[in-house]
Amino acid sequence: MDHLDYVLKILPFILSGLKLTAKIYVATLIFALPLGLLAAIGKVTGPKIIKSILFLYTWIWRGTPLLFQLFFMYYALPVIGIRFSPFVAATVAYVLNYGAYLTEIFRGGIESIEKGQYEAAKALGMTYPQTMRRIIIPQTVRRVLPPICSEAVNLVKDTALLAVVGMPDLLRIATQIFTRDFNIIPFIVAFVLYLIISSVLVKLFGKLEKMHSIYE
Amino acid sequence: MTMIRMSNIHKYFGSLHVLKGVSLEVNKGEIVSVIGPSGSGKSTLLRCMNQLEKIDGGILEIEGLVVEAAGNVGVKVSASQQQVRDTYRKMGMVFQSFNLFPHMTALENVIEAPITVNKMAKTDAVKIAERQLAKVGLLDKKDTYPSKLSGGQKQRVAIARALAMDPDIMLFDEPTSALDPELVGEVLGVIKKLAEEHMTMLIVTHEMGFAREISDRIIFMDNGEILEDASPKEFFEKPRHPRIKTFLEKML
Ligand SMILES: Nc1ncnc2c1ncn2[C@@H]1O[C@H](COP(=O)(O)OP(=O)(O)OP(=O)(O)O)[C@@H](O)[C@H]1O
Ligand SMILES: [Mg+2]
Image (cartoon, rainbow over all chains, first blue to last red; front, side):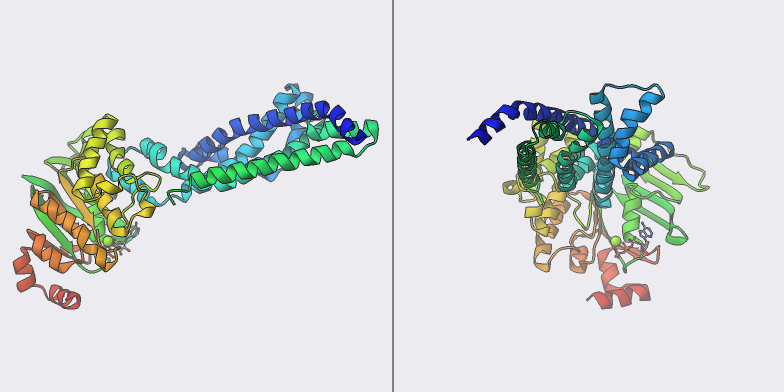
């Protein structure tokens, strides 16, 4: 029974870690999804200069480790006088990284829409922006839902990198309690929480995908 | 009244000369069928009319307005951009592959352009859409997604969608070529109904019997040129050109 007591005792700390993890998670999705969609539209339809900038963006951010990007935000930028709060620094790093991946997913989705859809819209008198907004983007979003959901599940696991830069997230709090008490239970609690969260998300996204596939 | 006038239209795809100086007039209420071998430029001709393709030479007039002029033709486009857009709306197009919007129900497909393009109130658009769906015999399928419709039904929704914009001219590019034989009739039936209402129509088709029955004129295209422009009677009974003779023999 003292195991359960111990779990109840450490749970408030662990949950405070979970809260930070959840905050970063939600903030990342809220900003990275629109960023990815807009950047994808820019990449497909924008003028050359925009396309080049976006190419550099996705190339650099997908071509370097997320952990490097976190380190860069945390340690390198302050040296040249750019300082954010730890939370903002972490969020920006995650948003830019996931935004880059989402850009490529959305771009692939947009480019997979058949030419006939554009032609039908044009023949009905729709302008290009109307066509994108009403015809192409809604189909794209439905089509890329599966890869986006799998990115969203990956993000749960990637949040653990916060621990490496010293943010008191779920993993770091668990580690702290472990070093303090030299007891494996905090790790087990964190393990169970990660697994529950990702499983719930997988289930939820599965439902979402089903809902939006009625037309296929 | 001349609805469409094409004068000496040229079209290239790279170095491929696909339309070689095509001239053609379609009058109000006329039904013109376009036939000819594969690759002769029939689709391109239609696509140039509603500006899915840009012409490389010649003059395109729709309802008396020069909407496109290319090359050294001594004529300038007399239509404003807005007028050019309006002419699109006055031309309905039906594609071989339907091109319905798969994320929308049949009804949503039909109300989309009236609402988005014509800024019509949704209730009015729905009224129009239901009338058009009833006309093509699919009112009971209005809440069905395209994926759940047969090819013939899809094509009829596509026709209703074009009709909802109240077009003056309907262009059909092989509307039945992608259909199973038993579904061809229902689509041709809808087109016949439009013919009875004196809709101006240009129809690319391989259905010879249908073309003969419905058309005021038959145009025969070969290798980017119009070889013949005649009444169905003349065309089928005494084709003047040997190429047409061989083509018809192969088709029948
Ligand atoms: N977008 C394009 N790019 C390059 N070549 C094209 C393009 N569209 C058509 N062509 C070529 O132009 C020629 C005429 O094509 P078009 O589709 O107008 O013929 P068609 O008479 O409609 O033939 P079909 O009966 O097979 O539909 C063909 O040789 C075709 O390969
Ligand atoms: Mg064709």
